[in-house]
Amino acid sequence: MSVEGEFFLSITGSIEHGDFYDVNNAYCKYGFHFGPEWSVIAGIEEGLTQMCKCSNDPRNLAVWNFPLEVTFKSTNPHGWPQLIISVYGLDTFGHDVIRGYGVCHLPLETGHHEKRYWITTLERLFNILQCDTNTVATSHLSPQICPFIFTAKNNYQLLGLLEFRIGTLSQNIDISGKFDTARKTHVSKTYPSFIMSLMCPTSNV
Image (cartoon, rainbow, N blue to C red; front, top):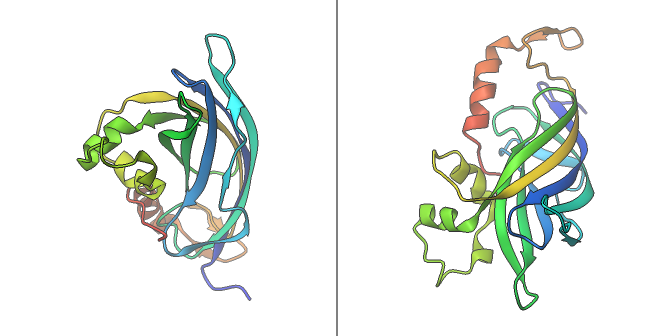
């Protein structure tokens, strides 16, 4: 049974590859961060890519081509979903270590999108949090705090770039301010708050 004001957002795509500066082996953990009025109704909310050895050329490219597929529903655009990426690699002893984090807002418009986002190293994040990296394990830093850290105006030490391909479909929502003939409602008044919600994400924890 449909709820009045309820809309749906469907995402399909892939984590294509990473272009790193100083990483030899890498894999990604990913998860979606969204507001309290959002929920996942189909697909996978979080996952893990395969380990990839970076290419032996100046690009130092790690290719995953890892699929993404998830469908959300909500009654409020505030807290529009974000894709949070944690990049892991191997240290000298072959142990898994966290290398950096990145945040990708899911596209607002329907269609096919190609996105490139920076991945930042942890040292700067711990400086922001005033943590001592000698006493606090980097793996204990929850990726869920990344949207809040990255909204601050800070300079970050960069690990590299990740490229995504994302296809977006939506139902019962129109952010252009046009009339939705099926629902007979006009949503242009919600557009400013919709954009502001992307600057002020809320936790789904």
